Length: 212
View 1 (cartoon, rainbow, N blue to C red):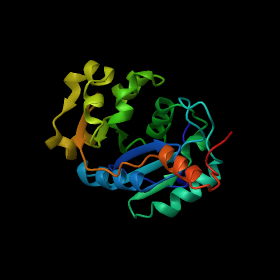
View 2 (cartoon, one colour):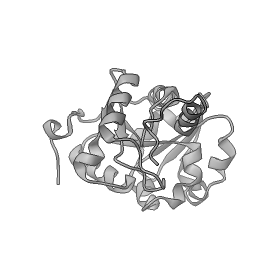
View 3 (cartoon, one colour):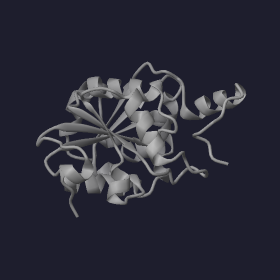
């Protein structure tokens, strides 16, 4: 099944290098913005696609309503090269592997790169069809201080060690045939969505993103 720009809400030009940055964004924060801007620069991307997911299969509690998280994401991530989308809800996909397959079918001439932090790389082998992701899509890993060792020693990094590109080749990653991945160190704002929600609770504020 394919979708056109009217159905997905965005168009991608043939040959564009597109980073795919998925998550619940519950809530979106400055760290998400920072890693996106670093990805645009380090991997020489034409676009970054923020995929605000209906839910995270690895998290036990559901996120805030999708419409709320989309609105918050669009408010904080305002950049001409960044698209905030609910493509997973449109395509009816739950897992990243299925979502990437759907994107690749919908935009056959775009060059996609899956973007993740080194902390996610450390648990990547727990993801549904993680090998399928590695075998079909180049992966860009951005490491903040403190997460580097866990990512580099992960199951995925070991299994796909021969497919790793040096950091100096990061600008070429999108044009490589998968499997290919690249690990780059970036200074990052160490502020996760979990810490933001905890901070709200500590301050006695209501937490619209946390569900009982």
